[in-house]
Amino acid sequence: MKKTKGNHETEAVSPVVGVMLMIVVTVIIAAVVSGFAGDMGLDKKTGPDVVLSGPVLDFDSSATPGELIDIKTYAKYDNYPNRPEVWLRDASYVVRLPSTVTDQHGLTFTHRGGDPIDLKDLQMEFSTGDLGIMVDYDSTRVQVQQTEPFEPKYKVGDTFDSPRGPRTVTRMTITYRDRPDDAAPTLDELMEQLKNCPHSGYFVKISPETPDDTIIRTGDQFKIYTDDTTGDNWAIACTNHGHSESMGIESGTGVKWTLSHKPSGQILAQGDLNFPDAEGGGYPI
Image 1 (cartoon, rainbow, N blue to C red):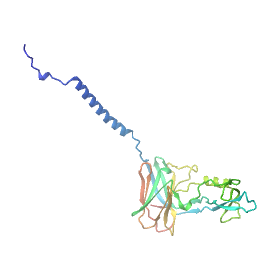
Image 2 (cartoon, helix red, strand yellow):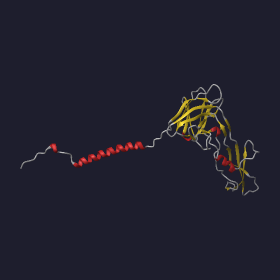
Image 3 (cartoon, rainbow, N blue to C red):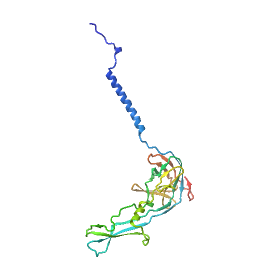
Image 4 (cartoon, rainbow, N blue to C red):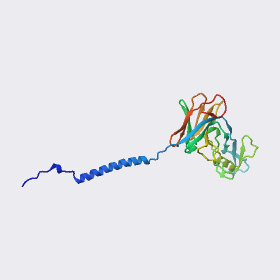
């Protein structure tokens, strides 16, 4: 019987192996396409396309510090009715009313065109040499801080235990510290005033449509306040997320400012802060 020799020119890869290779290639291509699609689908934050003028240095200031109000709570022992009422130190408070700020020196910007911006998305850095400080919409000015709304420990008529027996709150007095003879607000009126006090931060819209309007559109102006210090110099004295910070802004110290979009980190404007030789407002920088 004659043996048949194999013809190498007609040999091929097994169909099973071929199918597996095709599957591997398909998986690789799918992985690459998925990777590109994933990158394209990422929620990458981009800054606004906006044109700002200025800023203009404004040296006018008109602010009145908020008054102090003393709240004192008194109680008597239930078992000793003849004893005089006692002032409760741990249930008495000193409240500072909101300051009245009709204007404050700082930097005024004008929106010239482009996307609207929200003051709540902005942050401003002042820096010189190795020193720097950053403020945003949530930063509060120490010089105009007021007491936050709070819940008093006791109300008139409340009874509580003490080492010498139960005691009952008999009265609560509310007086202006510097003018105690003038009629002061009631507790409810005082808490409502503290609750509805204006924002005491650094970013302010000029001529807002409503008290809580923070959107800046073409033609709108906004101002970044600076704080008072000695002489004609400025400063930043703020509370950032519970931490107090401060920095002096003095003429001739090479202070730089950078306004940026907080969510994206995009710089919207920057420059040097140069005080003019003459006093007055409206100096562009």
